Each structure stands twice: as C-alpha cells, then as structure tokens.
Image (cartoon, rainbow, N blue to C red; front, side, top):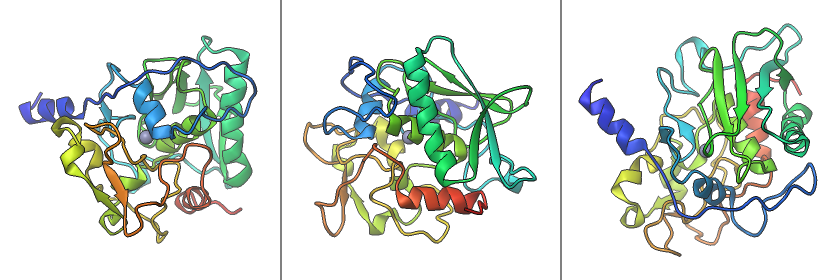
Length: 265
Ligand SMILES: [Zn+2]
C-alpha cells in the first residue's frame, strides 16, 4: 500500500471516550436516554473499534465518494415504480425488540421518502446489519454486501439507526459540507491532530438546501474534544443554536433524500 494511504488510514482511525451500557429495550421507538446527542453516543460506542472509520462512524470509502460519484454509481437505484429499494439482512444476534427498533427506524424513511428498505431475496447489492464493534456505515452503495454496524449495546436507537442508514444512502456529516465555515466555527485547538480528518470539509453536493443545524447528520458541539466541556464545533453567529440531535430525521434531511433520489412524494 502507498505509505501515504497507510498514513491517511491511520489518521482516519478514530475513537472516543466513554462507553454506555444497554439501557434496556422498552419499546420500538427507542429514544436515546438523557441529553446526550447521537454523535456523542456513537462516538462513545465506537471507542476501540477495529474498523477504519472516517468521521467517527463512516467506513473509509474504498473507491467512491458519496454525493458526488461517477454516473451516480454510489447511489441505490430507483425502480420502475419510482421507489428506491435497499435490500437488507439482519444478523441473528439481534433480539426481536432490536429488530423492531431497526424496522421502525426504517419505516420513517418509508413514510417520508421513496426509499424502501426491503428484506433481501437474491439482490446483489444489499446492506448487512450486524452487531459489530460500534455504530458505523459505508458511504453510499459500494456494491455487493455492505456492512452497517449497529452494536447491540449502544447503537440500537432510533436516531442512530437513521443516521447510519443515511450514510448508507450517501450522506456525509452536515458539519463537513462545503459551505460549513459560514455556519459553524471549528475550534481546532481542542481537536487532537489524529482526529482532525473528522472535521475536514468535503466536496459535497448540498442540493440547494440551507445548512441544517438540526440535521441528524450533524455532530454535537463537543465531538472529539480534548478537554471536557470545550467545544470543537460552535455554531455562528449564534453559539447557542443546538446541534447534534439524534432523535429523528429533520425536515431538511428528508428533503435531501427526496431530492437526491428524485422521489415523488
Ligand atoms: Zn456518522
């Protein structure tokens, strides 16, 4: 491997503090307990993950970048009924409650977009939802079987599942979009060098939608911070604006899915 590539993969290895115990599965729509935003939650859960993660929970894309990709090859295909089927399989390690939480998260896409997560029959390209060592996903459709990791202890929450599925549809993190410097200030002094890649601006197609502080794809204010309580991302000009929610897809998240996939809804 090219030494520079090895280095960048090394740099992309991410991890963060804390680990949560499974708070127990009371119902299918399982919000994240407490006020911890999704970013914090999955970065905690991803501590020590052996996968090569970019931006905390995105598996390093092997050949393609989502949102801009050759011939739209990194997106899922729309069928003749104008629906975008994303076949999936689910590991047998999940409980029936876990599966209902996962399916409930999928149903929010079904209700508001033309995306349809369908149980795989014999499709070549599909996502495999597995109880691996963190919450993470590939970016867009990579071809063949692709992993979406939802660790049972820490990732089986409505908003986190939506977040990871949205990566699999092709969406980056909101705070890395091309125009983000007009909306947030990155406080590099609190970002460890080896985590800096998580805050790199990406060449994103923003689809003429405004920056969305409320996106389920936005990191929280203290993601990857070196000092407890110090913000790595501060909204500007109003620093009090909330970011990092992991409760539900925002209106703009939904609009973007519909735009990207040409949904008629
Ligand atoms: Zn993510």
